[in-house]
Image (cartoon, rainbow, N blue to C red):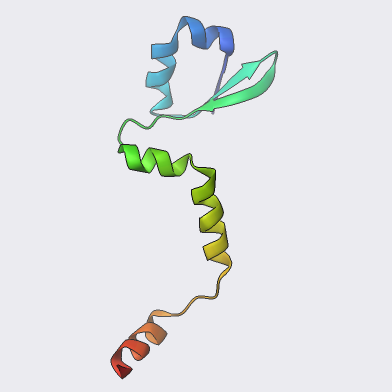
Length: 81
């Protein structure tokens, strides 16, 4: 992971956007991490929106806590109908 200051980002934004397509860049302010620049050039708008939506990730975490079924259990249930 690369680092850049806010001042560097202001001066060379397009360079950092291009770099972020290959590796995340931590933006620092007063020597402390302030943000992360992540490239999304090969993704569609919906994917970007979901990846950055806290409500979506809350829903995912909740679903991961629910009990699951094996593929065999699902097949058995479907064949019974």
